[in-house]
Length: 268
Image (tube, rainbow, N blue to C red; front, side, top):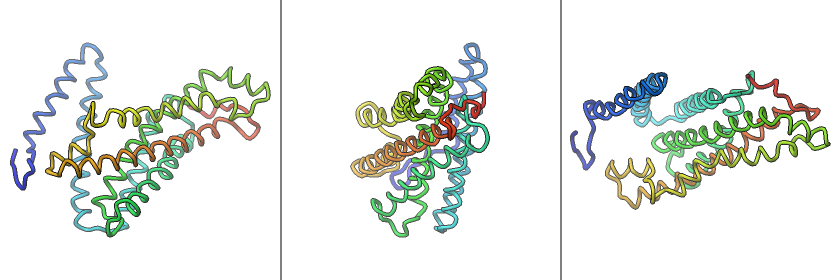
């Protein structure tokens, strides 16, 4: 480690020492669950490579602030997040809908909340300054992606398991919305549980990542806390509205224009 300007700089050797924890965990899990060890090592390798590449790209972007490049990188982040949402589904929608629901929901929620934060709350000049725009959007997309993934997975799985109940309600004259309303409420709650838990535990059980990173980088604790509160509120809004939009689109897709349950639209 080296210390300049109040900030401790980590070397590749320092990071290698931390990586030993992941390697040790992977080796320890071989007997219990052999497949998990490989997943852990691949995920750790992806983390190191992806974050290193992102760091290099952001270094260039911060030095040359340009709306076009900020927009292109933001869209790339959105499309990758949409793919991750689709990949996490046990029973996902077939065709383009399996990908589109996550992308549309995150675009409507995360991009709108990020623009609100940049234009109204932060008010930096220019408003698309990558130092603020990219990290804000990244945190919103990451957390919204998690909420949407949980909600969609729970929705499609519950609809599959409770198809007899849903179809019975439809036969009795209930609308599609009424037939699946109980599941829809449970699904929305499931999608928001992670962020609700994070807010409830912040500052007491855990110190959130952004705040911790700023403090380690030498920022004043009170300023770090202000930014963390801002981020938590933005994430909650983005995750909530994103989950709401995703569930609405998914429920609409689960039924046809004649109010019939269409589970054939799900991949088995």
